[in-house]
Each structure stands twice: as C-alpha cells, then as structure tokens.
Image (cartoon, rainbow, N blue to C red):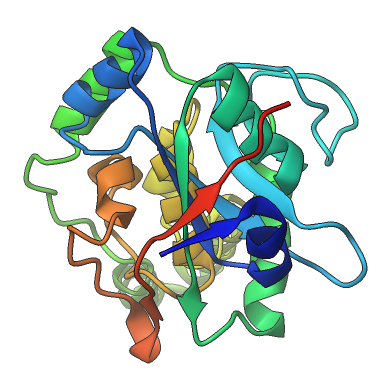
Amino acid sequence: MSISLDEAVELTRTGDLWVFRGRSVPDRAIQLTTNSPVNHVGMAVVLDDMPPLMWHAELGRSLPDMWTGTHQRGVQLHDLRDAVCVWGNRYGQRGWLRQLEPPADTAMEEAVLRTVARLDGTPFPSTAQLAWRWARGRLPHPPRLSLGGLRGRAADTSRTADTSRTADTSRTADTSRTADTSRIGDTSRENAAALETAYCAEVVAVTYEAMGLLPAGRRPNWYDPGRFWSGDDLALNGGAHLGAEIEVRIPPR
C-alpha cells in the first residue's frame, strides 16, 4: 500500500512514526551498527492549528528548528512535510508511515511538549558512539535502588533521633526535587543523563516512554530504528499498537 505525501501529512497524528531507509554509505553504516533494516525514525507532532511537525534527530541542519527558530544539528522539531522531502530528495531515502492506535490523548501531547522542551538541541552522537551505545544497550541492566527504597531508608534513619529526622527529610526532599527535574515523564534519571547526545531512535523511545507507551526503566540505547519497524515486535502499554507500514510517495523537488 502506498499513498502520496499530501495524503500522509493529512492522515498523520501525534505519536505516528515515520521510518526511512537509504542506500548511501552513512545509511548502511547506521543500519549495520544498529543491526536494523532502516536507518532513521521520527515521530509526528500534530497540535491544534499548527502544521504537522517531525520530532527527530539528525546530523543535518538544512531546515529551521520550529522550537528555537534556528538551524542546528542534533535533536530537532521540523515542519513534517519539509523534513520528509529532505529525507526523500536530498538524502535519497524511502519513507513509510506507521500510525499509533488509539490516537494520542491530551495528556500524551503534553508529555511530548515537555520532552521537546527538555531534549531539543541535544547533539547527535558520532558513528563510534552510536555503535558503542547500541552494543552497551544490550548488556544486562543492573538493578537500581528505587526512589521508594531511598525514602524508606530515610524514614528508618529518621526514627533514630529528631536531628536525624530533620536531615533525612531534607535529603529526601532534595532527592525528589532532583528526580523530578531530570525525569522526562516516567524516564529515570539515568536515562535522561544518558542523552547528553541522542540519535533518532533514542529520541522516539524517550518520548514514547514519557507518553506512557513504553515501559519505564529500559535504557534509551536499547532502542534502534529497527525496533520501530514492524519486523520487531514492539509491545506498547495500555493496549496501544502501531499499524503496518504505509509507503509514502515522496515527490521530487
């Protein structure tokens, strides 16, 4: 099944995925280093009367970032139609649309905006970093002490003396404030800190996690573009699912 770009732009909604596959040396390098049949993934952001936007990460800076109004590399928010045309014509990519069902609700859209505010402008990693982080994302994830465990420990300590109680309560409040500041939706502090640089699949994964669509606690670098292709069984929370790929015919420019 294929549709025109105009039809795809009309159909797309917040949370829908756009995946791309190219044949250039950089495209093949990304496919090989991430063990993926595709080399790029972005997420649609469609809010109110704004034109549909593409939320993704890339090395180029040919389009203005709609969040900052500047040209930049890394994590960006672009006019969706323009972004698809750049990937189709300048980068020689084929593109597909995968729709999120059911559509994103208001709370999810608000989570998207918070994530955009947090990540926009994050640099794109080097090829070596990309390969290393993909491999590291598949290593066993050591268990972390939960915030609840920290609070429980603080409560136990506070029972020792009134002065300890005051200090522990203060430390617990500081820990909560730090976690709230660095958390993207339900994303852990470790996940947020890992995104000092970010590639496309990590951006989509962190955004989906903030929307409540992916389980919390998994490293962002566990995800690669192929995780969002139908050949990989990506289980979403709450009965949500992604439709099959719809090929988009990208017009020449």
